[in-house]
Structures are given as C-alpha cells and as structure tokens.
Image (cartoon, rainbow, N blue to C red; front, side, top):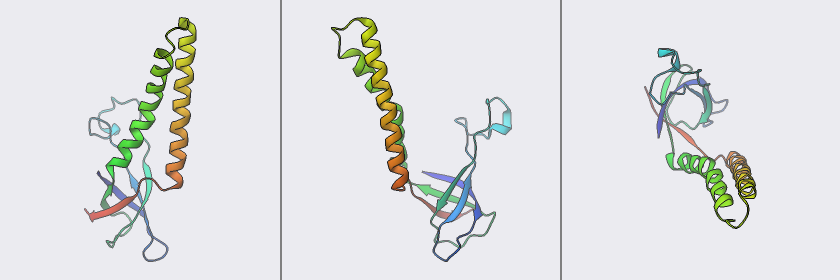
Length: 136
C-alpha cells in the first residue's frame, strides 16, 4: 500500500528514519476541507520511515507499507468482537434470552480487550513498517 506524505523532520544521524506526515483521505478520496460534507477533518498521521533516498524538509514522498499487516489488524479489531458476540449469543441456546444477551455482551467485551492487547503488542514490535519509495 502506498501513500503520499510530507517530510517534517530529518534523521539526526545518517541512516536514521525520517519523520513524515500523512494527510488522511476520506473514503471518497478527497480532503475533508474540499466539500465540507464530512463531519470533521481526520487528523494527520505522523510516522517514521526508513529512506535510502536523499530527502529535504517539505519534500513530498511516496511511502510504502505492507498492506497485509494493516488488513490483518483491521480484521482482528473489527471482526473479533462481532464474532465473539455472536458466539456468546448463539452457543448457549438453552439459556433464557436475557442471559444470552449478557453472554453476547461479555463476548463483545472480550473481543475488544483482545483487540487492545493486539494493538499494544503490535506497537511494541513495530508492527507496521514504512519505507520511502520515491520523491514526488
């Protein structure tokens, strides 16, 4: 997956990572400032990326990240709570309706907790890595 970013800080030592700011785009592909129909402007994303290319402050660059890691994390964050809710609701079919809802709610909360733990583990491992591909 590639995105366009702006160089906001250079590495202190040679071979270090550059700091980039990515302006998030909406699902329609436009900036929220353009049409004013969106509820608000998405905050800019500040990342660190490795770069074999000489860049200067303010340069526009193309950044590559492994899309599989991002899609896997998104599937976990959105899918796990829903799956655990459904399992908590459907599996104990012999319980009264109120208890089934409670089991589903507990499953949903466990799914959210699992997503939070996964997020923290990925941050410690530097789960998503970015690399400057080219200067625009």
